[in-house]
Image (cartoon, rainbow, N blue to C red; front, side):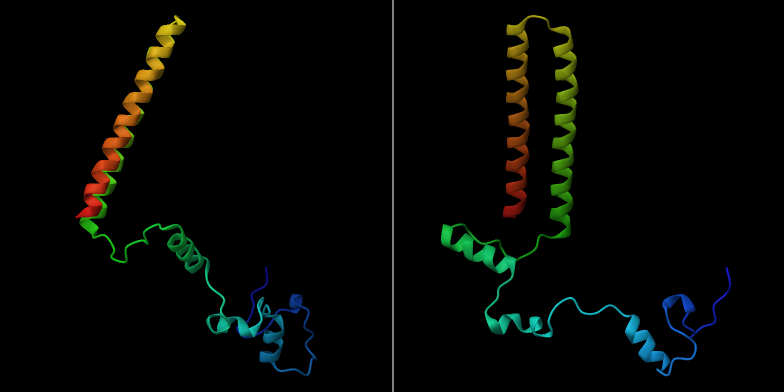
Length: 139
C-alpha cells in the first residue's frame, strides 16, 4: 500500500488534482452534514421536553415519589454490590441443589413439594436481599 503524504487528500475521495477549490473546501465537502436542523438546540425555548422530564411529570401525576437527588457514597455502593453478589451466589447454589434433587425424584407429588420449597427459599433470599438493600439506601 502506498504511503500517503500528510495534508494530501487521496484521489480515491473523488477529488481531482486540478480542482480550483482549496484543500479546506474539499475536506469540508467530505464531512458529513448535520442530521438535525440548527434550531433544535433551542428546544427548551420551544417547550419541548426530554424523555426524563416527561417521565418525572408522569410520576408526579401518578403520585409516585421522585428519585432522590443525592447520590450514594462509594462505600454504600460497594456494600450494596456485596449484598447482591452474596444473594446471587445463594440463589445459584439453591438452584444447583434443586436441580440435583429433582433428578433423584420420580414421584410427581414429591417433585411438586420440592418445587414449592425451592420457590419459597428463593423468595426468602430475594426478600432478605431487598431488605438489606433498603437498609443501605436509607443510611
